[in-house]
Image (tube, rainbow, N blue to C red):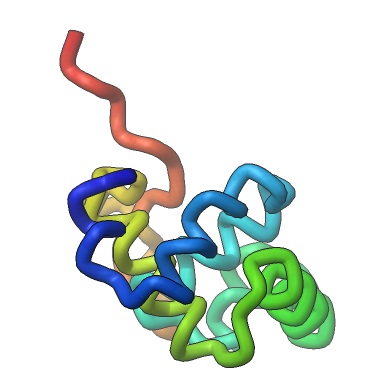
Length: 110
């Protein structure tokens, strides 16, 4: 269990063990949620319809055994505290809801 995950309530900690069941796209949506994106912003950045983002969100909530977007956000934030998001300056300024994050894992020091 990660340090950040140990500080979550038990119900949310259990969700961390289910993260490997998420698809790559569902994990991306979860990471975007961690940095505060709403469905519209996620859809714009992923170049998909907002309805598709909602479907991904519904699916990931079910897979993780969560009942709300808030719970998913707490789990996502805990995951991000462990280094799965890297902040950068390269996001296009014209993007709505510009947040400037790269949605890829950070390289571990070797």
